[in-house]
Length: 455
Image (cartoon, rainbow, N blue to C red; front, side, top):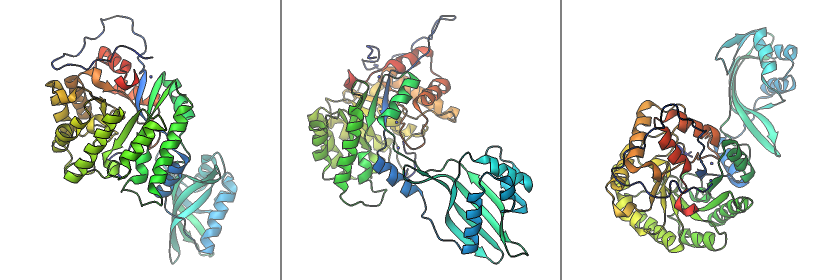
């Protein structure tokens, strides 16, 4: 969901039910010439929705505030907005030798060609929201957003940088313009309806929806009033959305394990909201497993999950630059044993996603599974967003080696979709199936896997 930055979407089949044991060789490929049908995952085990409250907060945090501009420059911006699709009118806004960048081809366009291009670039009216302005003599710049109203609030759908100059005639004109799309801001919520539409397009029957409730208790964001109230509201909203599709969606509660209300909220999620499991995000919750106090709190949460019968999806990656084998060994030796009776699903193969760079952290867990360590009896791994169309061969080869070491029957597919720019389910599965050098038999096992907590 969130890569290494402050920046986050099931036919039951008997296949995939039993853990892969140590020493199993990869399954054979299909016989040459054998007819094969399209392979589609039956379950997306790692998905997210995005509530209106978090969407607004995310958009606000990713955007700079608007600033005032001098009256003369404000008139130029207003002229741009009024003449958005009129090449003749735009020609009077741009300097005769102005250049603009075509964001698709990367080509610079000059003069009247530039004005004509800009008049065709947008399908609907827009305004420019300035966030930075500087004027020095006869030169100026304006940085900002291309903006349209969506659902009653401004949606910044692209970024713009304008260079302006004042001619001998005393009027400001645009001398150069660059545009980038899309903006980082999320324009609206991500609902269960949208997830179901993606599932239908990808042929996915069921999905596990992981609440982002922990986001309200994240130390990476400014504190909020009534934090626990917002955590509750986020879990409530996720539970309501999922309940609209009870045969296809399953909800997991989200909470920061370091908070004093963590166990209380887990109990409420299980008792009142009937949420199936628990999602923990170590990185976004500020968990440091090298800190004994943090380990003690996480152990308490794992014990509570075991008592409540709540399977756990654990995002182990943290922002500690030293993150690696030492961290996952602490998880294996001190935390995992506190939940011996429920499935623990390690998110992103111990990485953050997208991509797979945390092989050092994955190694101790994979070795423990391969050795038949009893602590790993209920340990599974999801590959949500670990494979993208730009994944380098080195990462793909490492990932395949780990998948085969632990056995493909422990691998749970998901896309991490919902927010954060991850592709929809169909594209995510296409990248996983198209890029990863596994056999078709291995892909069929992974596609058919259904986590024990869904059976």
